[in-house]
Image 1 (cartoon, one colour):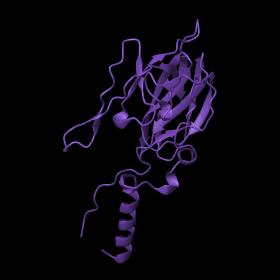
Image 2 (tube, one colour; image 1 turned 30 degrees about the vertical axis):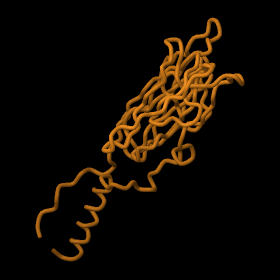
Image 3 (tube, rainbow, N blue to C red; image 1 turned 30 degrees about the horizontal axis):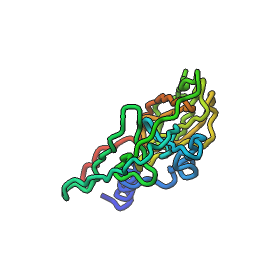
Image 4 (cartoon, rainbow, N blue to C red; image 1 turned 90 degrees about the vertical axis):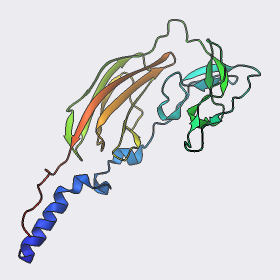
Length: 225
C-alpha cells in the first residue's frame, strides 16, 4: 500500500475508535461538571439540641430532616469482615421502632452509630409533588446538550444530578427553582438523570433516561496488507 493511503487509513481508524478509547477527550468534558461537581449541602434548620439525618438518600451527603439524639446511647462499633474483604460491615445500634440512627461524625461503611427521635413535621405538612420532568430529547450524540424541564409543588429545594462517563456524580448549576423551570446540561454518561425536590416533610424524585451515541460510526477492519 502506498504511504499516502496507509497514512489516511491509519488516521481514519484513529477517528472511528475515538469513542471507544478508555480515556475521555478533555474537549468533550462539560463545563457543568467541572464548575459544579457535587450537590451543595443545605441542611435543615435544626435547633441546637437536634441533629440532621437522611431517612432515604442523601443528595451530596447532606441530612434532610431533624432528630433529637437519645441520651446515653452507646456508640456502636462497626464490625470488620474477614481479611479477604476490605469493606466494613454496617452494624447499626439497637434503636427502637420510633427512632432512627445517624452518625455524629464519620460513618464507617455508611452506617449510623447512634439513635435519635425524628422531629415531627409541622401540622399539615406533606412531601412535595413532582408533576412533570422531561427532556427535549432522550437520545443525543456525545458532546451535545440536552434541556431538562420540570414542574413541582410544595418543594423548598430542587436538584438535578447524574453520573458522568467517569463515574462522578455531577449536578446542574443551582440553585434551581423547586416550583419548576428549565436547565441545559452536557452529560457524558448515559443512564438516569434524577430530579430531587424536597421540603421539611420529605422529598420526591423523578427520572429521565438518556442515551448517548458515538459521533463516529464504527468502521470494519481495513482489508489488505
